[in-house]
Length: 403
Image (cartoon, rainbow, N blue to C red; front, side, top):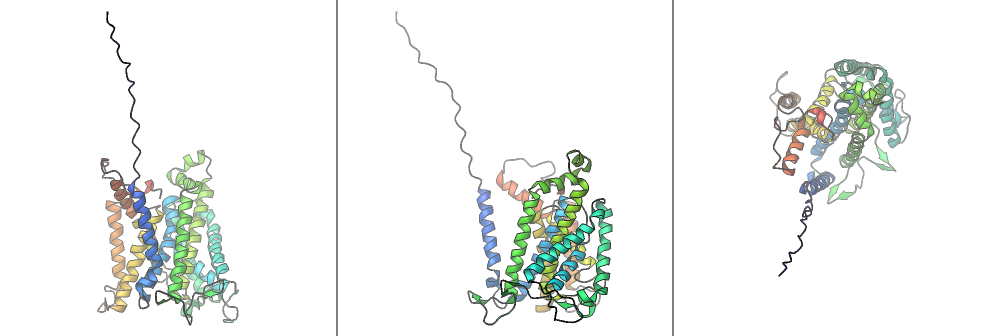
């Protein structure tokens, strides 16, 4: 009798999962970010000695980016509406001029003669304290009610700027913005001037690097706040105050804190505005000027176009809103654009307002998440092309933003 031996059954094993491929988007993002930073660092060399006007345009965008980042934290992350940004810009500019001003410059102007870096920090802290003084209102109001209440600060700033000449210099002449200096290195023209690739690094080139440092610092501080416990408490209060309270979040304190932080960002943008203009001068009316209602609307446009609550979106929105205005002004000065514009006709300011006004309407109608949502959709398609799109075509809402 023969015995047939059957081989033992081979246990079925599940093949190990293939190692996940490294998503190429991360490397693409890293490389793109590195290239972008290199371009920003080399911008004075790229535009050359004759491109100071383009450098001023880029500086103005950075001012809008710093102020826009502060406002998007308040509006998009904390769900608070504020139109008081021009007021805090004025407080920051005047605060810097007073703290760093030369006491012997004029008998009519107050100047404490502090080091410029200390004056910048002092102006930011001053704006935060003024925002803290408004905390009893900011902590108890929300939405359109807080927006209207904050609007009163713009009128208060207009009155204070025109009345307190000893600080602001008055509406007729204003006062000079003190030259910024760091460890003895002045951000002003000098002879001889250091050069990079044959390009002299004079006042505007130095201010570009200073503004770039301010903008990068603001960007990373804001991103850190959004991704931390502070950001989570902001979003909890924004989405549902009752639920946030049940989780132990002090709603009034969180809302007031968001207003203080946003005010500090606006104060830094005010210091940058004073250095950019080389002048601190309050407006003559509330509708036009550096610290007017028009600027409040422009910052609101930055936040909406960029995407509520998105820090990178605020930078993109500032590029569109603040960049367009300076682009058209540059075109009118150097190329004669709008030379035939009559009073009430199409000027550079009017055309730029129409452009970003149209952009706001298009964003609200077709992509409420703004440029940040468009960017996320493009990256999402690149990441997983087989994933079916959502019913609404991948449209996102501002409340989904965590960037």
